[in-house]
Image (cartoon, rainbow, N blue to C red; front, side, top):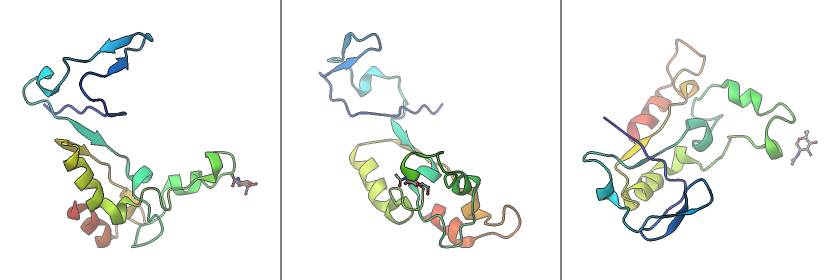
Length: 133
Ligand SMILES: *[C@@H]1O[C@H](CO)[C@@H](O)[C@H](O)[C@H]1NC(C)=O
């Protein structure tokens, strides 16, 4: 069984975290051994939010590319054309995950990167990108 714990903030053992009711939770005894055998600590991303490179290397348009261009839909007219540029910087991201001692990484695939026309023709640059991880 694979379980993922998305760490929204780094917490060292011994620090107090809010428990949800505003009362600090004592985490002094919390560590990896507090979790069942085989529990995987990991992180996750969404392709649209991290990849960037939306109009190059053979990727086709997605419904999100069109949606974010509708005035008033996205704060500050933000798009995913650059984001954190994981398309080019994935090695740095994998190094960061290793340095943080994560066991797992859940990522999503931008299907318009694989099938730029929706169906049929395959963009092998996109396939190669996901195979490089
Ligand atoms: C977002 O786009 C609209 C329409 O083009 C423009 O009027 C507005 O100034 C832009 N906002 C920002 C934060 O760039």
